[in-house]
Length: 222
Image (cartoon, rainbow, N blue to C red; front, side, top):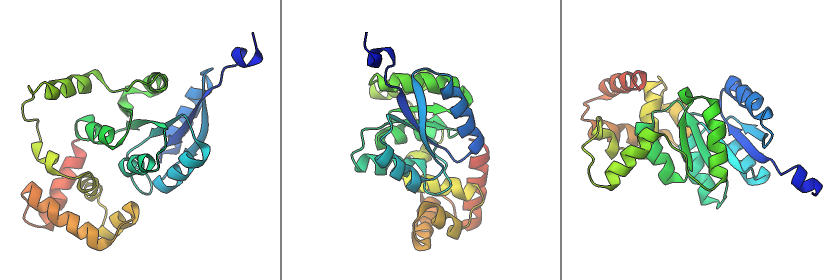
């Protein structure tokens, strides 16, 4: 037996998460696993993209909410660069609203944080086997839709929103101003105002006040 076979190469994981406590918990968890290691960390989209391209991790664990940019846009940028990294979304955001969007963008798996880091470890190993990871509930919902048996889901109006519009709605619900949203997503205030108008039209809202109230109520009830 060679030394290489005695000490197999570890799965290199990049953590993309804006909460230091969550990153620390992941570090502690992966340090106990003989086949896993953290090769880098990032708390925002631009930094994460740069580290994915330079460090070339096997798996990137990505939150959708970041300090700058968004996890969904990061996934799109990573795939546009042709990176083969496997991407596991690990977030508090509802899988009902976001899972299929992230999978279409190029993610390989989706896991909500309330399922715990233990499941994330299992998901990382599954992704390395070339298999996708998502919950049983999401799997069943996707199979039902593919079979053409799906009834209209609750909150169907959200289906008409673009990925960017959904992100803007989320940030409005967090109480962000147009300037703050523009800075977070690296786009112009004019573009944000255009998204606001589209949101009002698609959601049947009359003015900015109704949009703010709707967004806040939605954000608090995800």
